[in-house]
Image (cartoon, rainbow, N blue to C red; front, side, top):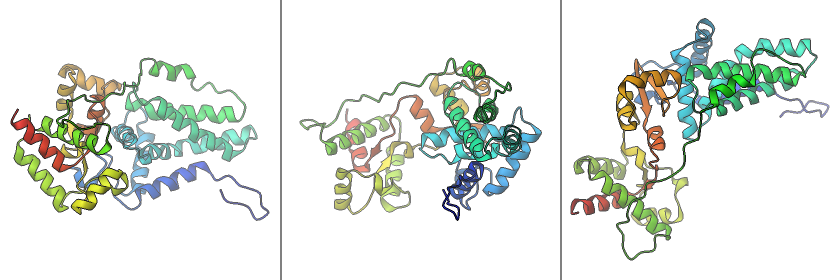
Length: 339
């Protein structure tokens, strides 16, 4: 927060802060709203953020009720939230601000309210609505709910009442939304006569259990090729700042960081029909559920096809995305071979 020459603090314009934050987050990289990574996407043309934002604003102004681009933005925001990355969530807010700028000025002028305060409340309300609509709300409905919440917050900040929308409207969408329970796979340990409370032992058990499961449906050559890529550096593992004490010790001995997430072994995305089959969703219902926001996992578009993020599918199925070491996975696979 900058200071004026006479020492008084001046609040930054929240809309501008959001825009600057998102531009910094995307930097000069191409923006892929299809799968999040332009290198993995089948669509070859990807704009930089400013061009993408302009297209999103124009698209919403022309077709505010339904837009595949905005549906994909919301889906990417949900997927990014799962990774702990907020840039797509903030991008949705940023692309909505052109529709809030004029309204904020009108409210500030007519009710003698501080413009910066009003815009700050608008951003807070839009983000709160984003969080409240995480499940059970169709992606096409989320941007409009965020916009209405922002406008209501602006009127509340100006101490007046607005009838554009009511809290009940949002409550109706959220009546059936419940957070999935947290749980993990319970697999029998392969290691005997060891203390599973020891972090190093627990790490080895996780890896061997994962390898034993993979051995049942993955050809050994595929697993070996994946591990060779990890060991030779053709495929990056987990970031070193995620390493525990036991992992750091093992990295020191082996001279390489070969750890990876179990989700890294699978494709980043699967087709909607495959995901529906895994989830037990009837084929006749799957596309209707996607349109109404009741499909269990967020979806995104790749060209004309719906794709489901593999990590989202694992999360819904309560399959933990754990860090494993190739040696442990291979030991577990070898053990399962002789069962």
